[in-house]
Image (cartoon, rainbow, N blue to C red):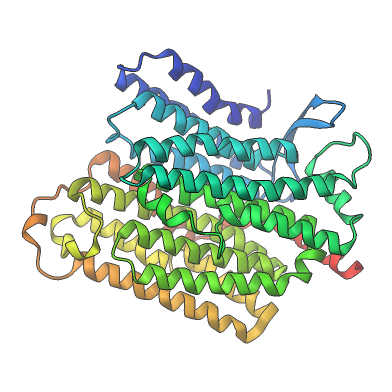
Length: 492
């Protein structure tokens, strides 16, 4: 068994081990779950070490035929697009479990659901067969439905149902598009992503556009892009904070990841719909930012800011140039770290105060100095301050967008200003003014909470000051994708 299979099956083995432990042994359950997520994180770090950054093609490939008649196979592989997402998924899963020590009910099923979710997320990023990709994509729905519906807030049942219905509805369009492409495959040739890309070239251009629209709906729901974002605010607000970390930090990136794969497969159709994509991106960025600005609920603010930041990812993808595509992967990584840190810190604050209303706070810097430091850095990163990884990502978006659309990028600047407004407002409301009586005795971050927060904040700052390793990890793959897109567009 290769390293990719080992990584993929690590959380699945953890599920089996957890199933054998009695439900009342909570310490053993927590230890085992954290052990297997840590092993997955270490394996993903080892992947970074053995990955050849100079080769942009799929590496460490593994393939086992599942059904010769249908041509389906258990095909895994890694490249510069999927590797950062794999590391992000394992990192945030470990952080989410570290933040889950306040979960006191149904601990066994909670940790099994977390590991099942990690299994599905890793499968999406590692799969090199579209049928396998779709199976793992759908696999993430069940654990998320349970995690939101059983351990969420007051409106958790509505939130979990909204999430599943939205995502399943989008998945139908994705499945139709996959079937449409498969009609141009040779008989029994399989559903490998590389073969499907070749088959897509045989499709008439009008059919390619319809197929791209189907993928755009399917992946756009998960990203989410405007106006397919209706499930997101409620799901984020009602989900337990550890699940919000995964929902925003990784699950949204699954949609962006799939869309990038499709754009490389259907560049001509993407160019034809480029105007629609940029309009959706710009509207989503400004709309999400404005809604985040007017929120008083901290989790709702972060949820709407995610709509705005994922709009930047869509803008990067729509540029169809190397700078923009690199900006997309950087923005996905940056948002995963920033949103993960914000949901973690907001959740820890809510556990202590039982309120998320920003108006209930003031001058927490005097009471919780460690929390104030991490939260301020994270909010500054959310507004794209130089020295943070978000600045590097947004700089690529500005440059790539300007190369394609010129002065239209003024609207991107407006979105960044709106983001700065709500970030600065949040800093002011949380950390300035007199200390309110009910906030005088709040406990600052504990050791294990400091560990979880430090990992994310360190990533935000380290990659902001020294972005070369992150860029080099994906550069060869982005160059290869850009060459494919350029050749296909120029040949049409």
